[in-house]
Length: 311
Image (cartoon, rainbow, N blue to C red):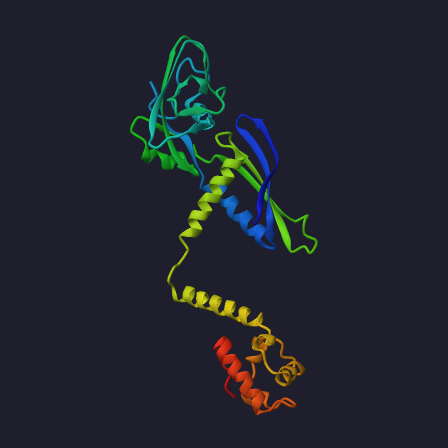
């Protein structure tokens, strides 16, 4: 059984968390397999929360401008794209931002429900240069991956401007494989995994979610009651019985000294060794006569319900 160990963890900024993990020991070659699978899931399949659309009072399209705001609408949309949200969300919601008069507008000015919070409240949105009122409404939704504004347009109500939606909580994943320090034969290895998140989730939590998702994916591939599975199960039972016979010594047959010595000289030490021969082949052994053969046959039948193979 392998273990997951956190080698390093640090908070670079509010929207940049980093952790380094060691996973192992794994069999040789498995590190790359596990690393690739985890990396793909971490980057593509973990869910997050993002702003998908915005309605700005007095603005009809993204190439508009608002008198009294330093930035044009395209710049405002790009700034909104940088806002990182976290929390629990089942259905899309609409939240508001209202700012009166001159000043800098940041993510802190967005009015959010208790179940949603902003990772970096100082995230810049715009600068108001005159005594105007800025009113915005945002659509917040849950999803995975990355949706461009072109794809989001069809999902938002009329009057809203689409925003590139970055749902991905994991920003970057690196991994490499190294030989396990506890293994001198180089047959075991450790997977070193580096995870960078946007602050909406801890790297260790992201790793746990990715592992759970992979487990769900591979569980769907389990096939029960198939001919192949039955064949493998039958083979497994056969192998176990083979191992049991291999552990039975010919001393357990309680043969006469003459028969026992003949078998030993023929390099027959276990029951599985004996069952490789037929009665005719035993009779070819030096000093092994019909009486000894009958003795072996009877002991095999009464003690283990086995018979010698046919010629």
